Length: 116
View 1 (cartoon, helix red, strand yellow):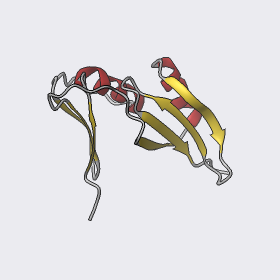
View 2 (tube, helix red, strand yellow):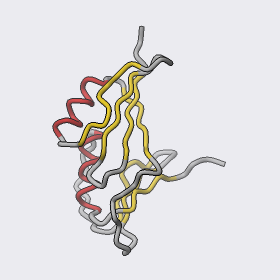
View 3 (cartoon, helix red, strand yellow):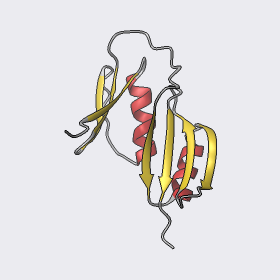
View 4 (tube, one colour):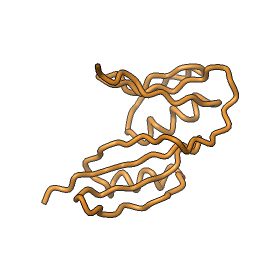
């Protein structure tokens, strides 16, 4: 069994999809107000409005991305105006991690495996 998709349910698909496109450095002009697919590789990332009202109080899950250059991505996150919960910091197990909230208050972790 393989994980096929991660989907953020949201009240505002274009806004949240735009945030993730900018975070991931993607160019795409999709404006579908109901469903947008951002990553269509082995595991998809989609943004979807299922017609129900979301309270944007998502504290029971998070998503993590592995990045090559934490400094560059940190600057991008900061420029997007995301609320930083944990700035980049080296962890005891060797990665550099950071955490922030996306526009719907989903926790997003970034991790980098520094080459030393």
